[in-house]
Length: 210
Image 1 (cartoon, helix red, strand yellow):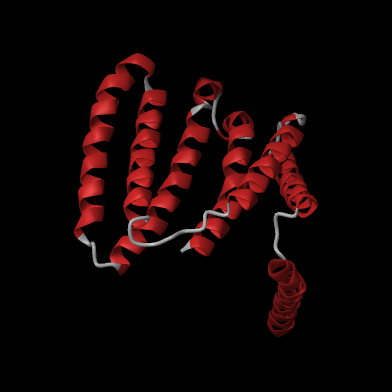
Image 2 (cartoon, rainbow, N blue to C red):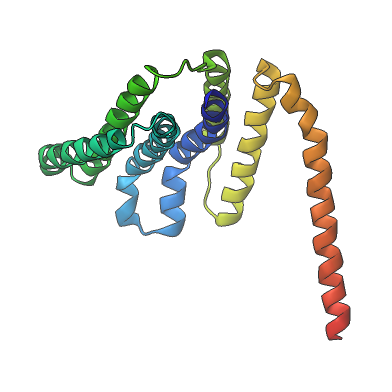
């Protein structure tokens, strides 16, 4: 469970920061001017998704110890909390209030699931690795924020560079362990092999058709 949480956060934290910095360009490209003012909803929902993943990991520990009713009670409580916060915030700040209520509900669920899970299991939260991931994500955020993105092609290009910046910073800070680094050549080899197989299949199909 500890490794699941660590890997999940190492993979999920960069997209949260990435979606936050790309929120306005995304809305500018894919929607009209009327929707750009709601860009703040995107990072809030992205963070909510991150918390939802944490909830799922710790819910599994409750299922292992056969506390199957506890997740139901937590979900029910979070649903009531969500409705109450919606009633409070939506009249004040509109759609942002709805996003905030979702965020607060998932935070409530994550905190409660974590607290209960720690009664049965001792988790290693790998705080140093998560801190390095956050710092790498922040570096990526500021790097991407310097670009003016006006097209889908530019969006893909900047997003790709952002991923490289994150990986570079993680290597620089020592955020990846030796075992994970040793798997990199294997992953690259399999990726190249898959690409070659795809090209071979495409060529085969083309020659067969003609």
